[in-house]
Image (cartoon, rainbow, N blue to C red; front, top):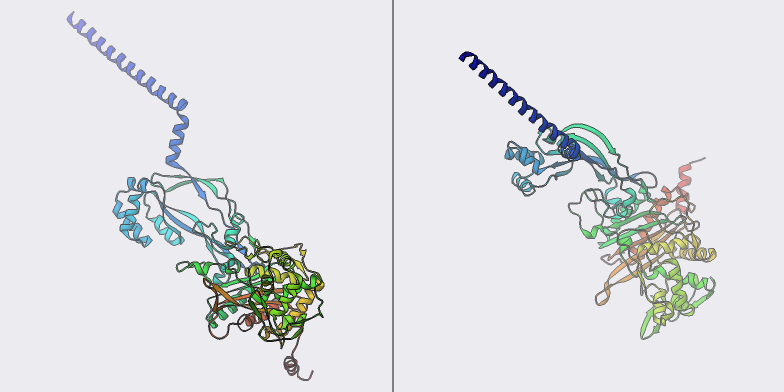
Length: 579
């Protein structure tokens, strides 16, 4: 009986334990199921987000910046693929099994100081992204990836390269390391050139290594190509000749701008000193300044043709009119205006040939200051041209001409008392060379542009014909002559202004030229700042630059020569033999 009781008790205990285990298992299942339902129902978005943060990454796809090319599609600025190396300091410090050893490997491959690298990582230990090196070679990037260090990665970017180097530096400008324009047309047309970055999605493991590429979420959109009006062939000629002149004369600086007078397109624009946008280690502000757009100066005798044009346009004189410049000087408000000598009676052409201050002063005084001021305004003198280049200056013409006294009117007529940029002077000569029609200056290649008539065709052509004599045997710019072509132009030699007024020994040497004179195609402005030595007149320093640049440019533009000297004809005959 006792055995039966013991057996029954044993069976009851096993059943109780069985039911207890079953109950506990059921409760555990219910709890787990409830938790799963809670997570899937109420916290699904949170869990998915947290999971993706640890595995799925959105990666920036850098957009290709648009190329900049010259009018003949020669590249001036291009973007090339490069690799940038980055680190997630927080992840690296958490997952690296040998922090110092891994950092030493990194420092060795990056040619960096181990201690500096270590300090950078520790100082940014809470950050999840930091560049180690930008714009490196694919070979270095491959070596870094082979280390398989936690939190260290490589991404593709682009680096801007400038094939023309110094030659086109002031026009093209340059970008920063993130390919955002900060000078030249790179800045002026930044929105046009800059593309729209895209987004790609990838899966990475906890060490930051790529597991799977999930594809592109938003494709990158490349920037647009910018076609400039520059002709790189003419740009090289202008750069070479201006640099040679600045060096020869020991000058402080120089500028040159050449314009297609029919379209307003800028074919060449150079400055000295220049800079290499591909190597900015020794970059200085003085060499970056685009003097053609930023430097203002008194234009001196280079505005005399416009005083003559204004007098002709207002009917004050005719081309055959005579002006008596005797005795070679005049007194106005206690100041003396002089010519180099007493030229006596001069016709209107003679006033420009001899560059007579007295001649143009008498024309301006008879015409009145307000008429002269309005004419200057119509040409754009003292006003921004509007190319959009950084730092472009507006220049200055004092209060309206109606308020000028006789002295102001006279000095304005020969280029003192107003300030212009080389750009503005080029604009004014473009009008003169284009039969009186003003075309807006541009650095972008144009297909068809409508101009505005400023001067009558007859007056413009008459003044250009007068300016041919300036380059002739009796003029001030004999060194501006170009073999095989008729050219026209005007010299200028201007005292620079200092803190105490005009400097006796500091000059700007100027020349404004038009070629060919019989059917103008180009207008060129040359400014040489503070030439040293005995030669400082515009006809001695700036005019020869025009001669050499125009000679090469006209041939490159396929403009056939139409003037042949006896010497050239003789050489041509010898070359023909007995044909």
